[in-house]
Length: 239
Image (cartoon, rainbow, N blue to C red):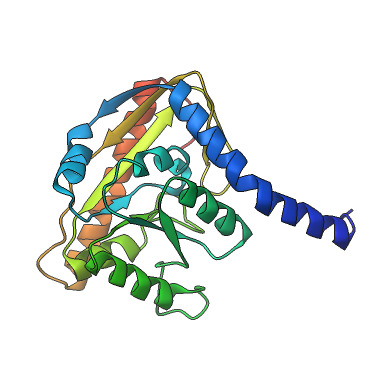
């Protein structure tokens, strides 16, 4: 049985107000109490030192603990976030880490049913060409899980910017029963960040080249995720 409409409205409003500060606080606490190891940190450090605009990409399931890394960026980051209630809460959490979001999807801007796709692409292009960086989950916001859509590679091609693939894992955490098997990291464990070398856009823009660019990103992100899981001893993750 659904609760009365007024209670649902109150619950929604309370979640919108309290969700961001509680969420940001939990993320910071978990990050600070986790013993992190790194692989490929030099790729991130090069971006920070050179103040180079980039497109950062990671799977939707591994978004939670990426927020603290955004504070290392000397450039403004815009994170692509879906247009729903959860997306609004995520937007507020991102802002508490010093950056902002673009609401919409770059899944397929040619389909009207993809809310805000065309506008999101235009906003992200303006931001990137203006010297900012972007953070995108290539399989978000609706999946399929672990399948890269065209958004990140398309933006990379149109701006000439490289994609920095990233992932993380934690020993203590719960994989939620969601479409992406979201990893809800918990404090006081071991964690690993794994960052791959930049994936530069191809010179050509024919369909086969673009497909290969997208496939390279997809395979790299999965490899990094699996490597991070291995480093933290997270076994038994469903395929």
